[in-house]
Amino acid sequence: MNKRILHILVVAQLVVVALGILFPIVWMVMSSLKSSADVTAYPPSFLFKPTLENYTHLLETTPFFAYARNSLIESGASTILGLALGIPAAYAASVTRSSWPALVTLSARMAPGTLFLVPWYVVFKALGLVGTYAALILTQAAITLPIVIWVLLPAFDAIPRSILEAALVDGCGVLRSLWRVALPLVSSGLVIATILGFVFSWNYFLFALVLSDEGTKPLVVAAFNYIGEARPIGAG
Image (cartoon, rainbow, N blue to C red):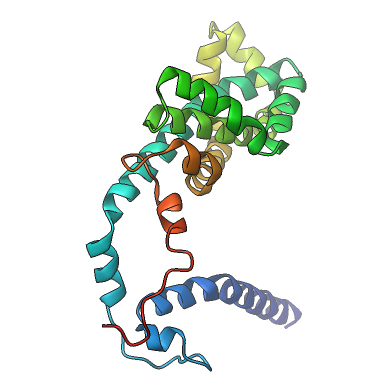
């Protein structure tokens, strides 16, 4: 009976936490389906007539899918680049028991973005890369790289040294032991690093605002243009 009560309490706690997390998302979706009058109504109305007018207005007035494509290209490529550089860096730091690469990348991540913005803008301007995918991918990779290293470093540290040493004795080189032995053992950490890197890259605003143009503008910058914008109440 005590175990059953404990199980019920745990489930109830998880339900309460899930509702708290999902409520802002549900509210956002509901608001997107409201008219302007319903959105500004006070007290808020939970019973309303759904409308797709807001989505129609968005697609008619902005190249939404072009912005979404830019975000996918830039975030996906920067995540892949961060993984390509971060995986071997984390593995090497783990194998050699060196902590300084992780500390260097962490210090760069902790520094304010404005510290790098002006030098990068000057460099990319001189190279003619301002407003290109390359500039945004390279700058956002600097965001994903520390995340990948710090997520995978403890995962690689958790692998018994005997397994890696056995792979080397059996004829695997360093890269082959990383690909064939270490990576399958840290697959869960790899998934987490990929998700976090993609999300952080997708949401990072500062570099995208300064280094993008109309052809490479991502969604996060396009959404900024809507802050403070409103149509008359009852429009549509």
